[in-house]
Image 1 (tube, rainbow, N blue to C red):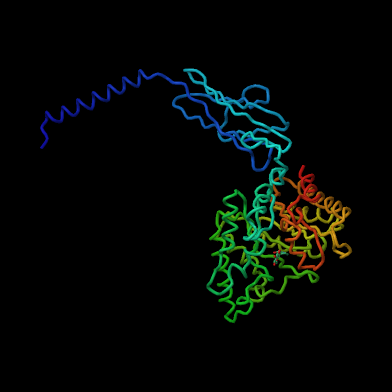
Image 2: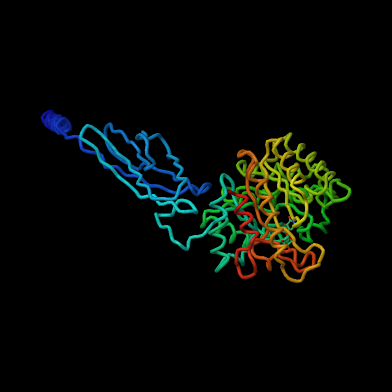
Length: 446
Ligand code: XIL
């Protein structure tokens, strides 16, 4: 047992140390708080800088900004400060932190060239234009393959694009080639590349009649078994990429050209007319944050098909199972007309949905009448690209999502095999040179 004397000594010791530390606190001098901040260039606007006040200090102090644009000091607000630098030049951004002991300042030099704010103040004269930096408030996408992410592709991708769609490796025949055997290797490579490079992935596509594995088409089990396999496939896939894939095309091309009816795919036969709702619901349940799209072609050319598609969209929307519409836009240098494209936009925007121009390519040789790219066609293609992009750019901000070009360089385009004609439908030529079409997009983004 501890004696009374021992306890008293301990108590006296505690009291003494508490008093002495109180005294020290009382005498403690208020020190100046060292100002510090970081800045980054906005992903959605190359002329906007985001300032982050990283000052840490005890006691009361205030922080005030001088962004180098003239005018009075601006007091710091919670969160990032967003500042636009429209004109080329050099600006000193300064943060002043004041407390009763005095003021400290931190500053950074912001340099702006014709492309926008220069990263780390480095306005390399070789620094060129960039599609993603020119797009304000939406993403610029392209179709990629896991084998086309290196060397010059890598440079072009990083410079211009921030939304990747897998050209064919995130389709069911590749991701689920045999019963019970998923193969996500190629999809993983694309998703990992996007993550490493700060890009979104648009998942394309959970269900497409043209990319259905044979074992599904030829499945001999019951309809209930079929449905549970599809549910498991969608749940497994969407769950795997939760937080990494921002959006999915759930079903692709469900409306048939010509009849404008629901295409009679194996999914419709086995799961019923509401199979798209079922698939969308499973995707929603697997990742409530992922954006769900319906994607199709010929929305611009075929009014009947467009009506049928938007009737389907309305059914999905009535149960909250759709966030956006993908219009593929495999189009030509001479068609469709701007008004036809605008109709698709209007139908989408009037429903409050996101608009994705999801697979843009513009053919210059639909009549197979040229054997090399002519300057006339190159110019006409540029004009069409610009028109498409201007229409997109004018969409209300809340309905913008992404513009996606279906591939990088002409000789990679799927159209060469699909139509069998010589074609030059994309933004880069076979040596990765920017074509007039590229500058058409850039002008459309202005
Ligand atoms: C195409 C790819 O480009 C090809 O590489 C693949 O072999 C077949 O699919 N509509 C779509 C896209 O939704 O998935 C298609 O992509 C082109 C037409």
